[in-house]
Length: 349
Image (tube, rainbow, N blue to C red; front, side, top):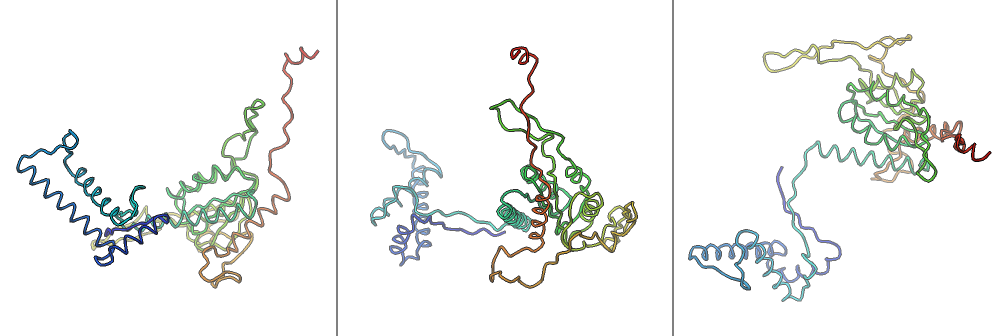
């Protein structure tokens, strides 16, 4: 991508920057100042070349002067500072503005930044509206990105009393069995530390809280649909949203390349679920327990251009999670005091 020069002025330097603009308005403002600095640098470079050609050696305070780009830049900055001081502009605290090179990022970087904003925004909403009792994890696919996103947040979010797993717009992949295994990992017990050494620790670490809610939509596809169907069949929690995409037939293992450079994708395996389900996921998808649609028009109460638009599916998932918490708590049980050892019993007797 093309690079551009961006000038940044800190708020505390706005007044001094305005002074500089006023002094240099006839020469083009900052562009004129850039030209002035460039001309100073070019002049110093030319002067240094002439000195080297003549074999002269300059000394400053009994030491040899520095040579090279750093010395030239330092001298140019010094002369610029003297010029600004002559305009009664204080530069003792450092540069008034900074100029940096800016390059447009690619689509992948933009996608990752948008994903991070969305996940952090939804996490903040869930935490604030449930008073920190419900966690939130978004899984965009079941490939490398989804695996990384899951474990990026699961470690901290699983410490809460309930957890919402968001599979909306999940693009599928191949890691469903690994992530389901993690979600089916209940606490076995608690490690009790000696008094004053910290709070109790759940064992094993990163175990799943007692209440789970799964979010799906019409864009949940392929391996994400396998996740949703298994989550519901094994009774791991409530599924909220709308029916998924309906495409779990695998492609890739029997693809053919044509002589003109094209490619022919041929389905090479189906997905079958026991217990009467059969091949129903293909052309049908996984059904939610609670069907909540996302209306195409802005919802009532949402201001025009509002970034944090109400999410009816997420709101229903939070409601169900809090309802499950009200029915049965998942907080650690009341732990009795340590049992007396044989030595303690003997001393007490």
